[in-house]
Structures are given as C-alpha cells and as structure tokens.
Image 1 (cartoon, rainbow, N blue to C red):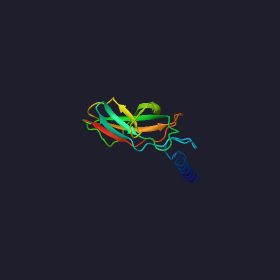
Image 2 (spheres, rainbow, N blue to C red):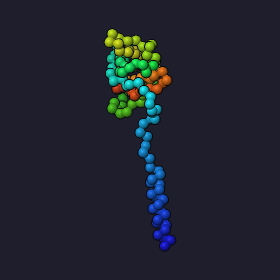
Image 3 (cartoon, helix red, strand yellow):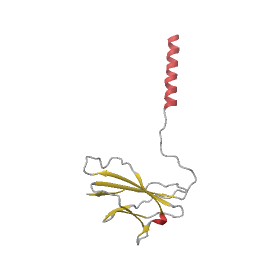
Image 4 (cartoon, rainbow, N blue to C red):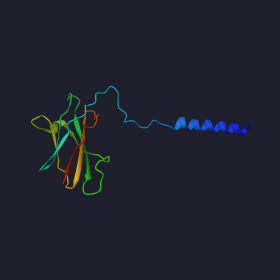
Length: 147
C-alpha cells in the first residue's frame, strides 16, 4: 500500500514538473499593438566607391512615419577560415535623421561608409524608425567584399 502511494506521488510530481517547467520559448521581441511601424526597406544595395562603401535605398510606403534610419553593419575577415554563411553579429554603424542624408537622381537615400579595411567582407542592414524611436523590421541584407 505504501509502495503504491509512493508511485502515484512520483507520477504526479513528474507530470506536474513536465507541465509547469515546459515553456514555449521566445518567439520574438514584444511589439506594441495598434502602432504603425515604418515599413521595411527591401531594395538596400551596396557598391564600392573610391571613398568607401556606398549604401542606397528607398523608403517604401508613406514617409510620414519615418524619422531616422539605423544602419547595422557586420564585418568578417576573408583571409581566415571564417564561415561566410554563419550567423553574423551586427553593430549599429549609424543612427541618422533622414533629413540629413543625401539623395541621388532616383530619390534614393545615400550613405557612405568610410570605415572599411581591405581583407574584410561587410554586410549591411537598415531599419527605418519613427520620431518616437519605434523601428520597423530590418531590411534585406546587402553584402560586399573588399579584396
């Protein structure tokens, strides 16, 4: 009798731990409801210039919500045995008001990154943020290699 109750308590304990200790995991960062986030940029393009790396993009949708742009950059050495397809770590390379950026003849925004070195592969993403610092999704990834 005592042995049967011990097994029942053990089964209930294991079941309780399985139910209460299991979690669904983090799906994504929390986002406020009913807020119009700026639309993500989908046409980010990079090219090499004599002065550095030139980023060009346009803002989709209405520009009413756009206040500034956050430029994310990742650098990876190309001469080592680094994994080019492995996940990269991005750092903020710039957080600039859109009104301060230059525009080309197609009305695309232009940013010149002069802090580059030879022998590195660079990847960029940008996020459009509104004046309340609420940022939309990250843009497409644009990569360039400096031999």
